[in-house]
Image 1 (cartoon, each protein chain N blue to C red):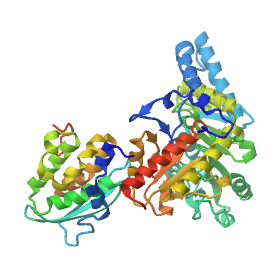
Image 2: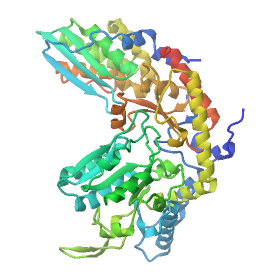
Image 3: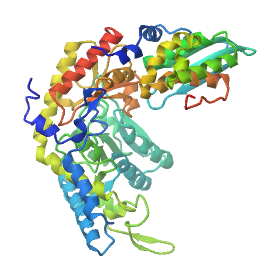
Image 4: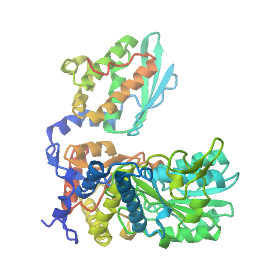
Length: 415
Length: 152
């Protein structure tokens, strides 16, 4: 049986991910929880270890050789990631713990300074909690209002009434690039275009996009772009916020501490240049450097090949699930409108029971509300099971998933 | 092909309670109610009781969640209805012991249908689901007695 019909050499690729070469419950591991976090290639793990074994020192502080090396590697990684997402200037890339911190940074810094009574923040009901709750927090402090773009029965944003949702009071539109719960790919450029007409800024949550496709922040036309390292073969606790230089320069610091100051006096201090103004304290140096390595790794494989491979797997999986029967798949039916995420339910078999049955066969999926309770409310369900693909998944993985789901049907009976 | 631990986890009796829960729905004339949830997986259970002195005269529940959590709460209501508070708490402790792998507890016939859930103890991440029913029972009885987490 061919592992795949796409361009990726699956066997060689999988061999680079140590975690994939293990058995779980006596079965070879099938890892389909990539929307939660990806596995890490040997190359990234080696860079991480090499930093701690050879170059470990604090950055931007010491005059000694190790500090110089650490600083160079840290700033090289910044330039690499900036380039990776099409930024014009590496000073526009602020390291964060991940997408969540990047959004909190914007809500806390820009939002606190720029939002007032009656101002509006436009979100969508497709958002991850991390692109809802930070805005609720700042709205409650500033008197701003939250409004929502709704979705249709396929989990696609309804843009027909976008011109009514966008008013002269709309200051910020915060939207995911790709939905973590359904895999819907949102028409970000169209939303940006319309938002610009009323002078609103646009923040894009790119956590599910950057790992899977070539992102170009300038082409998207947005003002802020947030993403995580751990979903793109990088370490946990790494990630970044990209923002336009003029915005970062006008925004107040997010946290205070070392690294982010120019001069500290008894009553007042002055701030370092961007991006350092937003990086208080010792950053995740090793994480940033290893994330740079992850970007190199993904570039080496190539996003054209990755996107083609995931799309092929998605198509194959949807076909096999359809053949199996009794599986309700949520999200857009047009493959052009979705990424490699399959959110599904099976009759009265609860997603947690589905996940336990699959786990006992060595198959890892996610079950629950996926930090997207508004999506669950929309479909009037409390949870779904979710299988999500990445570059190392194969048709064999899909076959194992479908076999596992056949067991769910066997245990719970036909839906 | 379905392996033995799974077959034991999803026994017919468990699925039967999941699909045809006993004592489900709000109890109109209740003397106490308690709501518990497992924030990790979203399982929810609400329990209503009517006490006659120390005796559980009526007990009902409502809930949403996996087969294990919903079957166990259905079975729990059947087991404790008509019993004294202290008896019910004793059964809660016995069930908790069974979930933590006690052989003695799992061979104790006083747990009734709940013995069907002993397979859950082989699935550590699901034990919380099975215990939710008794968290609700302890809450609604206001016993304040914590189960011994070591199961000993």
